[in-house]
Figure 1 (cartoon, rainbow, N blue to C red):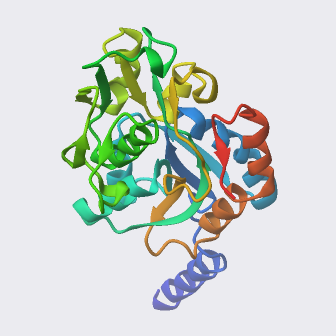
Figure 2 (cartoon, helix red, strand yellow):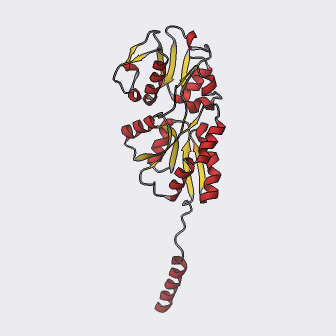
Length: 271
């Protein structure tokens, strides 16, 4: 009987140990993103990842900015693609997330939109400016307004970190109202402000072209610190599926797709 048991154990070992354990998720890559333009870029990359690397890309579209990095830090997704660098840095600093920025993919010129005016010359005194309540966007918003001579930021302030309190001159007496980023389109549609500062992805989602429809548009994109990035969990950069994602999303194929799809300059491929 003992010999029979030993033989059975050896047989089971040969059958079970002859092959490595199969990880059914080893070729699956889960990336969270916002709808526009991020999901469109990932949809373009999806068949390339499959054909070239045998990787199945699962795209998870979310809307709340503050869910993405929390889910990535908890390893619920492999990567995310929705945020610019200042927002990423703020999230890591505030929450201690163990995540890293691995690739800049594109820039979305930030715009101010209006249902009531078509030119900056028409902006009335004490105009209501509706902006995101995400502090990481405030420096960008203020820099645009300063570029159009509507406000003056205190000398010596890093514009990436500028806040409303850093405004030292406001000749038109502009009044700022802060709301959640995902509500900016609703504010615009309901004409709730003379100007509504809308993040590029939300503007595109609402059928707006930053290059054509914005009353005020961010000037220049060279060395723009607000490049949208791929973020991953720290320590996973050596995984083949992450390496493949970085290679594909940084490829000329993806850059040309962005250039051709948003030829009006509403989305600009990172160089």
